[in-house]
Length: 207
Image (cartoon, rainbow, N blue to C red):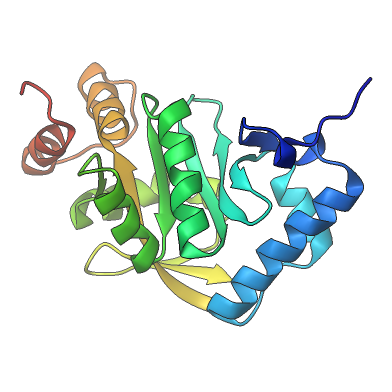
């Protein structure tokens, strides 16, 4: 079978095992450099390989974002690396190819601002009350790394460099998915009507 290196293709969507061992090392080096510069620490290569084996990357060897498609069909934002410019390009690759799917994640404040601005309002931070009520049902998705839900709805999450504050962001399709699940009784999350109505507004349902 001919090995095609996605870094040299116009199509910029790839998995870890689409890459040669050399390019996997290159990808990890970019990931590590970004996280050490931003936070002071990063996973070692073995842990990165273990975590990233089910990720889909959007971008290039210079940077981008990584997501994981959950069994429910939701797309979870898992990592970003490289320059802010490259992360932004990776984000737009994701929107072009998967933007009609429910997408969510817990990200730093600067990435949250980029998602909100770069998506022209399609991505929004979740209301604090929703985060507080939803997180208990989602801890396993985070590998039980959530230490605290703060009063502003941000999350204190354990990282290689210690506890960091991150923000729950999602696109309108995600909020529609949540609302549909609650209204149909399929979701275990129970929300007060005032919070549910706020999600309906964010999702643009009925507009």
